[in-house]
Amino acid sequence: MSSIQSECKHLDRCVTGHPFNPPHLIPLVEVVGGAKTSAETIERAMRFYTAMGKRPLHIRKEIPGHVANRLQGALYREVAYLIDQDVVSVADVDAAVCMGPGLRWALMGPNLIYHLGGGPGGIRHFFGQFAGHMTQGWANLGSFELGPELQKKIVDGVLEEVAGRSIEALSQERDTLIMGLLELLSHRVKAEPIAARGHVADDL
Image (cartoon, rainbow, N blue to C red; front, side, top):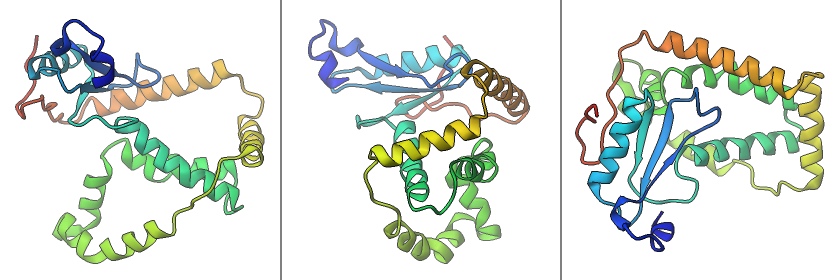
């Protein structure tokens, strides 16, 4: 945004609202200001998206890929590495995500999940017990190139997993399941989004 707004007339009013596919269903919108964006503009964008029923997330510092895309990329790097090393098939690594941690991530983020994993001692106990093992595990994560051979391997595996279903059919299945999950999640107590200056975003 800092680069984009350098060519604009009203620098303080420039802001990015970054949604996710399918944007008509996914609540998350990343709100990113540039070096010259005013706090008022950030807060106004946060209120706007909140009023739409979205869950705006204020990205406090510009970084390539924002936040959610970086998280997706980090996970997919290891997904592709495990496929490359013949540890698991394409279909099975998808199952490992969506039938395992993905179910928990739809309900709580990784920090809260690890807080629960710490038992009565919460996240402090979790770190005391597992921080060393996690750090060692990070050192063993895959480093490789997503070259033509691996791309073909993943493409072949994806097409096998698709089993002849069309893009339209898969999209409809995805959207139907997202709507069902959102309906289920709507019954839980919601935490209000936090605006740019650290207070709750007001309605428009």
